[in-house]
Length: 207
Image (cartoon, rainbow, N blue to C red; front, side):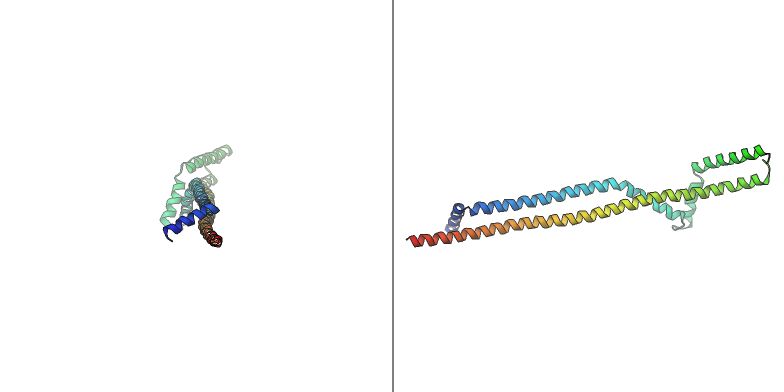
């Protein structure tokens, strides 16, 4: 289009309002696009905050399941022995064993059977039984941490899927808004051209 043609087209567009409408359509599309992108940033911020809040629980679950595997022997005999030895040498077992053994001796002393074979058998069985109970308690406690970590990880995964879906929808909306602005602008330009042709016909008829 020549310079004169563009000038005339612009003048007609100004007269008919097509130029203003095209500019408004383009601005509206830009505003919608910016709103969609701002929504994506807010969703990303919220997702990052969620991950930050859940990270300690996920982190707690990872070593817990490793210790469970060690106690079950799934990481080899050395790891199993180390896990059991850690419980056997723990202050908790030492304190409970001392209290239990003193209670056995006190009861034996009260009944006059302090040197009896039953007392020695009870003392010999007490620590192994106590160790077994503590191993079971430890495994159950680790199971609680494992469940918390698993639930937190699953929650993160679910939120991640939701975030991805929302971002995809927002990007589609942004693209649609941009395309709508361009299409609106092009349609109004064609309208201005049609108005120009109509005015030209009217002028020709007048003369």
